[in-house]
Length: 203
Image (cartoon, rainbow, N blue to C red):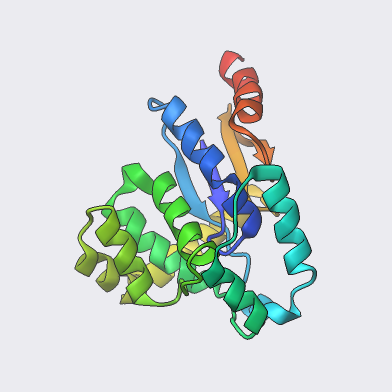
């Protein structure tokens, strides 16, 4: 399976626990987690310039049960914070390299750092904190985040997403023959994903 997310995407945040559950239910299936690149280039604007953020977040909470923490709410109230998906993808690349088998969990940890605690995913200290909490080599993660290598990995992730034709996050795909086919896009429960996934696994 390939799981395409963006660490700054609220819909991806809403899907994070479902993805953790799916990965737990299928330990024998490899899950490749790829950063999507939602806020890049001219898309990097202050939160206040994004449309209907609070209404969208309420809808996500209603559909998925996730909550948005005080730290994040302070960011949205201030409105000046700029989400940079390139920086977030660089941090994820460093975390993923440190523990590739825990990539799904680490993607969820990035969401919590931002949407609960209001921490910037462009700050090395954020990725260091996640690394420490997961028992990883925090210094190696920070060094990877700061190194030009992580920028190349982030750009490779974005290019892969474009090549697969993924235009919305989160998207979960499975391989059918020589094609990658979407199983689910957007909000979904683990049961809904299981039902869809079963069609492909049985086929």
